[in-house]
Image 1 (cartoon, rainbow, N blue to C red):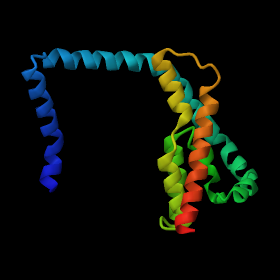
Image 2 (image 1 turned 60 degrees about the vertical axis):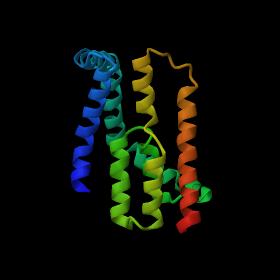
Image 3 (image 1 turned 90 degrees about the horizontal axis):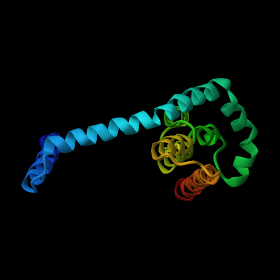
Image 4 (image 1 turned 180 degrees about the horizontal axis):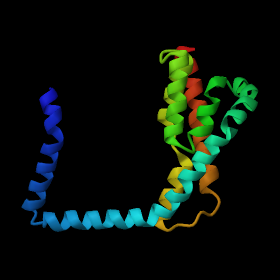
Length: 173
């Protein structure tokens, strides 16, 4: 089974190349065109990345997410959300790596099989880094935000967080 797993990607690439060749496609030209398009996309989203990443780091360094997590604790309890996941919920829309670090710390402190650990895992897996996605995709598409994308994305994240907390409490609470 391990050998099959190791051969899967090379076999898929070979099958795609064979299928393209059978249809008369110039494989080299298609690959260079794809690389060219990828570089153009990178070039178009680079300004957004250069702005978003330092902003996220500054926000994390400011300590504001921890302060908000502490202040919002009573509301989290009222909604049935473990208070300890507050920092994770505040970081997830901003930074995937920061949210992963917060979830990892929760699992180390409370255990991965605890209600808090499971809730953090489900929150992490069911939500998205909304601000990053909006910045990158809007930049790549050349679209202008009309003011609805960010509130909609944050509402979707909130729904994910609340749903994750409720489902975990139902299953393991």
